[in-house]
Length: 271
Image (cartoon, rainbow, N blue to C red; front, side):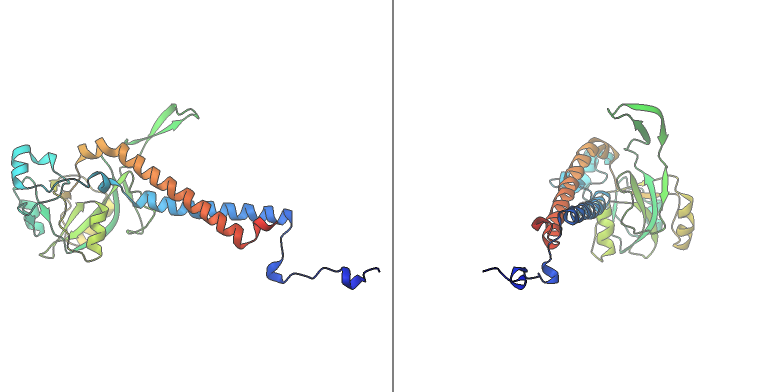
C-alpha cells in the first residue's frame, strides 16, 4: 500500500529545536568565534594593565628594621616592608622637614589624581620594527607624563607609568606619593596600611597636578617615593614574562570556553 501524503510528512520541530543549515551554522560559528575573542581580549587587557606580579617575586622578602638600614644604607631597602622601628610620618610638615634617611607612613585615605609619570627603569623610546624584529627609523620618545580624565579608570597604563596619589596622613594633611597600586587599593578600601619604606624625592610634576595639590594644600616640591629603581630594572623582564604568561593563559582559556558554550547554546555542532 502507498503511504498517504499526510503519512509521508515529517513532523515539524518546535521553534527552539530547529537545526540551522550548513551555511547558517558556519555563519553562527564565525560570529561566536569573533565575539568570544573580543570578550577574551578585553578581559586579558584588563588583567595586563591592572595586575602586577611583583608581589610574587617579593613573597619571601624580609621585613626591614633600622639596624639593616644603618648597616647597608637606605637605597637597598626603599620599597621594602617596614619594620616596627622605622619612623612613621604623620603629617605634611613632618614629611617636609624630616631628617630621617628612610621612613614609612600609615595613610588614612588616598586620592587618585589620574596623573602618571614614565617609570625611570623602562625604555623611554618606542621603536619601529620589521617583521623579523629589527629596529628601523628614528625612535619616538614616550610622553613623560600622562593625565587621564577618569582618575580611577581601568584601562590606564600601569605597565610603563607610575601613578601619582595624594595621601591623607593621620594629622589630616596631604602629601604627593608614588606607591604600589595594591597599597592604594587597600587604603581606598579602608584597610590599615603601613607603606613600603620610602624616601623624599624632589622632582617635577605635571601641570595638571598643581591645581589639585592647591585644592588639598599639598606640597608640589617633594614626593613620597616607595620604589627601588635598581630592583625594578633588574626584575622588569621577569615581571613582563609572568604577566604575559598569565594573560595568555587567561585569554585562551576564556576564548575557548566561550566558543564551546556558544556552539552548544546555538546548536552549531548539530549542523
